[in-house]
Length: 139
Length: 139
Image 1 (cartoon, one colour):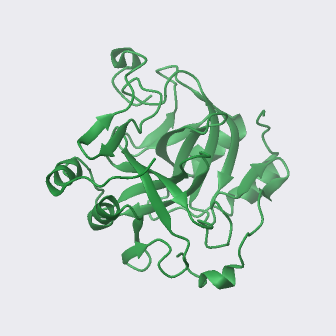
Image 2: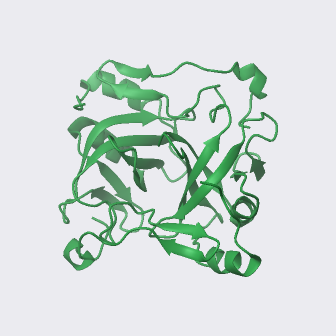
C-alpha cells in the first residue's frame, strides 16, 4: 500500500468536510498499517492535516509548542502515511502509517505501554531507543 | 483475555496518575481486541473512566449531552473491556474491547469508514445494521 496524494481540487473538497473543534483541532490516531498496533494519539489543525495529505509524511500540531510538529523532524522517527480515514463525525482521523523506529518519546514503539491491571499500572514494553537520543521532546 | 477489575485502593492509585484536560476529559480510543480494528474515539471524564474500570463495560462521557454515555445502553451495541492502557502523557487511554454488534451510530462496525483517496472520500464499508434501529444517536 503506497499513499498517493490527491490533486489540489480533490484535496480541498475532502478537507472542507472536516469539522475542527473550538481550538481548530481534530484528534489523530496513528496505527501501524500492517500490524494494527495503535502507536499514539495527537492533534492536527487544518494546516497539519493538509500538509500530511499533500506530502504523505505525518505532521501534527503541537498544543504545547503551538506550532506544526513534523513527526520525526528532529528525532528521525518519522511516519510515512499509507492511508488516512475520517470518522463519522468528521472530527477525528485514523492514520495508517509505516512508523520508522519508535512513536513514543520514551523510546517505546507505542505510547500506550502501560496497562491498568489488578496489581496497578504495568509497563508492557521497554524502551527500544534511549530517550536521550530522541531530544527529550516529542519528535 | 478476560478483564479483572482492581480493588478500590489499586484503582484509586492508578486513577490518580491520569491527567485530564481543562474540561476534565481524556481521549479514549476503542480497538477490537483480537482483530486490531480501531472502532471509534470518544471522551471520558474521571467518573466514566472509573466506572469502566470497575465494571468492565465501557462508559464514555458525551460532550454534547453532557452526561455519562454507557455505550450500548440504548442500542445494545455494548463494549466489553478486555484491557485498558494509558499513554505516556497519561491523557489518553486505549481500550481493547469486544464490540458487540457495531460501534458506529451509522450502523457500521467502525466509525473510521471513509478513506481520503485521490478521487475523494471513499466509503470503505456499508452499514451492517439499519441506523434507525440504533435510536439515531450515538449509543
